[in-house]
Every structure is written in C-alpha cells, then in structure tokens.
Image (cartoon, rainbow, N blue to C red; front, side, top):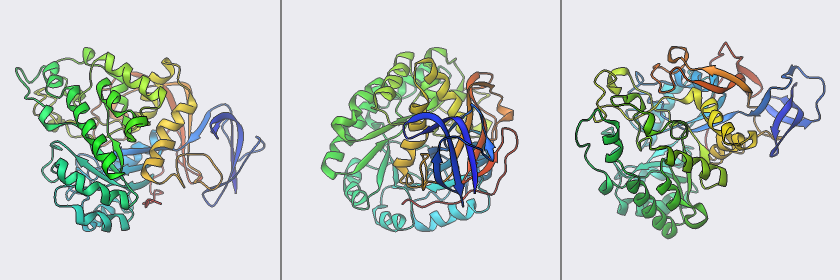
Length: 434
C-alpha cells in the first residue's frame, strides 16, 4: 500500500484536497487528505493523460519514431497511455500478423502503457473481426491519400459496407475526413504557405464529414472524426445531430496561418493549420462539447523528410511531433480562454480513454482504476527546446515558445516513471480494449 495526496486533486468532476490509496497498482480508496507516502502539496494531481492519436511508426520507419523514444516523450509530458495508429509502420496494422509484428517491436521498450488501433484499407473487411478478437481499440481509415503507399484510402462504397461490420464488433471507426474531390493542386510557388492551405480547403473537410454523417445514420456505427481543423467541419459535425464524435489537436489550437512564414514546413500537417478565425471556432467547440478531446496526432519525421532546407510544402511530410507538449500547449490556450482543470481532465484523459475502450482502467481517478496520475504545476512554465524533448527528432514548431503548465511527475500504476528530471523506462504494458 502507498498513499499520495495533494490539496488539488481532480476527481469526480471537481477539484478538491484528497488522499489516494494505492494497492497493487490500483486505486483502492479516495479519502480526505491525511498522512501520505508522496505529498504533492498544492500541485495538481490529474488522471494520467491518454493520447489516442500517436504514430509510433515502428516497425519499418523507426528512424522516424520508435516505441522507446515515443513512450519516454509520453511520460515526460504526463501521458500514461498512448494508442498507436496503424500507419506509418511497415507493415501497417491491417492484419493480425502485422499487429503481432508491431507488438514484437514494442516488447520491452515501453515506458508507458500502449494500446493499438487497427486499420481498414481496401479489401480489408475480412480482417476486421480477427483484429477485434486480438484486442485492437477500433479501426482507422483515410478518405484521401494517407501519404504512404501501404495504407491506401478507402472509397465511400467500401466504407459503407464495412461500417456495419465494425458496428457489430462494438468498435469505433476513426476517419481522416477530407473529400478527395475537394482537394486541389498546390498552385504557384510551393514554398508559399497560403498556397498549401488553399489546396486543402475547409470545404473538403465539411463535405467528407457530411458523407460520414449519412453513413453513420445508415450503419448505426460509432464514427469518430480525426484532427478537425476548421469552423466549417465543426458546424457539419454537430454530435447532437450526426451522432459522431470529433477531436482536434494542440497545433490547431495554438498556431494560425497568419503567423506561419513561407517555407516553414515544420508547421505542415494535414488538414493544415488555418486562420485565427478557425482556431477560435475550435476552442468554442471544445468548450460547448461539440469537440470531445485534444490529442497530439504525434507524427514526427527526420529533417530531410520535412524538407526543412527546401521549404517545399508539396514535398514535405505532413506531421507534427508534439506528444510531450500536449498538456502545456493545450493549457496555455485553455487558461487564456477561461477553461479549467476539469476541462483539461476530460479533453486529455477521460474522453480519449472512452474512445479507445480502456476507460475501465484509464482516464479518471476512481476506485478500481489504474493508479495513473500526472502531477503538474498549472502556474509553472516551460521554454520549449527541441533538443531537450524525448521525441526521436527535435523538430518542433513550438521551438522557443514559453508554454504554461509544467509536469512535475508522472505515475503509472502507482510507480513514478518521470520525476520532473529522470525517466524510468520498461514499466509500460500492452493493452487490449475492454
């Protein structure tokens, strides 16, 4: 048995003083504060963060990111569980054999717990049930080119056929929603950021989400729209009408197109970072519940793949590495707009855990759950230095920024895996959906 306490524990939808008793990695009691083995004073104790959108890329592209570095970055950022996306590894996680290869690549390298999404690509419907039996959390698909040849996009007719199957399995379907017919060429100088944004307009997001809304009604499937970036997309999503859920990412909540210079491919992602008007619409949607969560969409790559020297938005890989920075990047904007710690616990832990089907163990501080916590100072700050991040590559659009919120400890099943300085690896486990 051990006891942790703080004057500021986020539990049961409120912030209050509490002691948490832990036995065999589980929470067994939550009580009024008393003597404790670990007394965190007035630092905030929140549920360990859950990031349901992480591209680890191992095996096959471990030079982009691997399980050892990704899960160390997670621990340093207060995240105790990640859910790995089925691409950009080789092979992608679209068969049971590929899942086993991915699990073998992760074995012995995990600092935090890790679950896995399966993938749905053309011709993959027969693999859905076997992957579900192996414990994947759900299935991801692209309506547009994914950027890697091993994971081609799925057409509307084949998706319509597969969604009832996924629904019967009781799993969610995660969709990269852009309409391929709504995308354009990158006209003019490929170094001009506005030209890149124009090639992936908000209308392409909105059109794809409208299609998914129709498919959701017909199939009764649980559909989740990934990395929403625009006001138009949020307007069409409206969960009260469509029954779908959606997420956004720290980079859409932090940056805006007006501040991104030409050739600054470190900011390239898909959908693109849009104007400040879109950014504020996303914050509004988070506050009123139309968007359910904030996830990293961590997708790093080496310098040459990001074309940092050439600055060509057509050639550069579209992904941002931010797994370690999700808490301070989100809190910086959230605090400035009047959001609170309860919101943060929902957006960064509770909702992603529920989506992944691991909320019986993760995402909240409650008796019977894993004793996973992030201990942090919401009034502290960090200055981002890429070479001090645990991600495999130090490339980050947050370079040099001062972000509000400092992680002081990360606790996984009652054991400290990060103490504000040192990371203790090897304690992560591989998870199955409930």
